[in-house]
Image (cartoon, rainbow, N blue to C red; front, top):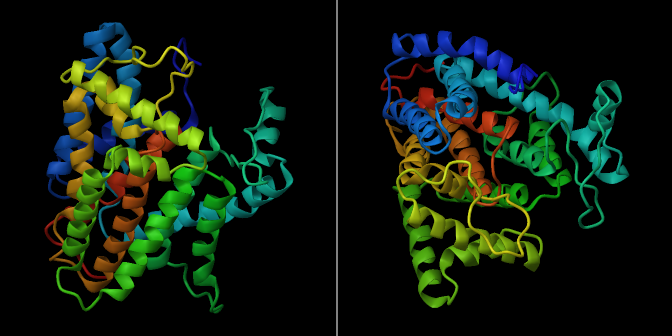
Length: 381
């Protein structure tokens, strides 16, 4: 702690890397600045302003400043230094290596109920630690994260990438399959609905990718089909399509009901405060709901920072997913497909999970990871 500021290792790294990465991006050494870069920077400026509007400049300098460091710093590091196929594959190899190391540890946690990493660090630093209730007869594994669902979302987010970017052969034919198994093991050991929903979505997208290779405009057709199904469900259901989908992204009816209530009351706060949001003030909720947590990353952006805050973070993700598939080598196109499927899984997880601390940083890094796909010219390696 430095005063009221908590300096975790990743915050220290991002503080040191922020200005060099920003300079590298603005100077053109990381390629042309894209609309995604611009929107992310606008999001940082807007959220800082919204925090200042509600809580004053001093508070904005502290909380808004650290948000700039976490979101902006992580995005800029990935965007400025992962600039071609070689650096992208290196970053992906590192992420998959981390999950391959964590998967057997967290599988042991889930089966035995002993949280090895958390207990080890608690013993060193003197922190107390209590787990979260079991599900389906399994202990929810934390790994090194703040919450099991954070670990599950990170692990699950790498399935698409793991399929299209396996490890080198190393003379052993089954080695390339191991990252996929590690990703699935890690996500399942968290026993989290957001992680499992992400896995299932990516499985379906991978199946579509495999079976529709001869279909022209296959991704546009799939997008149209999903929109059509959403409209049909919205028309025939008395709850609305969003509530229907939220109810199926949870383990229990109680959790589903709770998230529907959060969505209902959260949207009302958005319509009452569409420009500046409510900042970090407590959102409106039923008197019987004691928890102030809001398990929906996208909704939190709109409630806290208004519609401008929501659109300046949602649009960069959508643009990064959809823009410029034409100037790529076949290998780069496969990598792009893997990253896209992984990002879609993370988008879905964000509908049932709020991203904070290291997961928030990871999300920003993952968005920046795909930045090199948006450059006009990509070299084939």
